[in-house]
Length: 250
Image 1: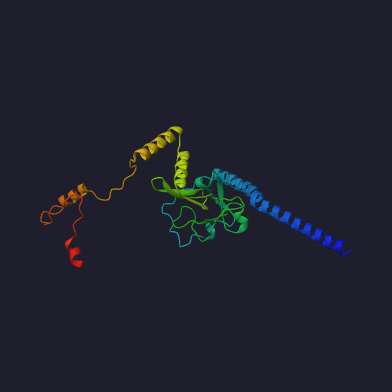
Image 2 (image 1 turned 30 degrees about the vertical axis):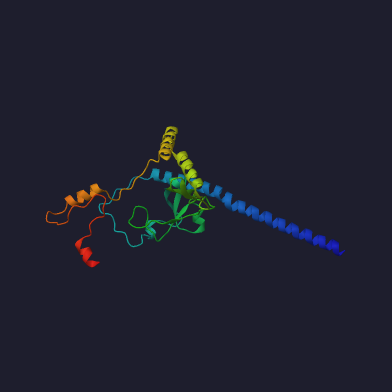
């Protein structure tokens, strides 16, 4: 009898946990994917309505003298809360047109990006600030950091992949070279750069040089000095002369 009750309790608790897990999974799917579908449809409708509205409007005459903006260009005359007034396009974040609405509450951010009421409007003097989601609700500010690499020597580099995995040494140098070649435009450019790198690597030829000081520059400096200067000739390759005022301060 007690064994039967124990099995019943265990089965009931297990079913409840499975149900809660399934509900949580569906909620995550809704937040991460379905909200993007709904928000994308809403954004496309907002952008389409803006284009139609702008097409019907006649160009307003430019005023003779522009009005002087205040410290915060956020009067009610600048826009009604919830109204879309601009379209934001950032190629780095994807080929996507995002409507800009007036306000930053959560309901408005599901329709696009929201303009902070205490920042200026586009085209005015000051800072134009907007808010938006990086995840869910259309993801207007979603950005995937693919990583970065830097060469620090012959056959050595450092880098990070997706800002999480860090690599260094020869492996990082090979990855940097491969990624650089893949991002070049055109097959001929890739072949030309690859053979140039290979020739420079085998022959130890410098591909970049930093000139800090040369005897030729020293001679030009001496020739530009006034005639009454008593400094004698300076041998090529030696250190520059110390000025007299600097010598007295030592």
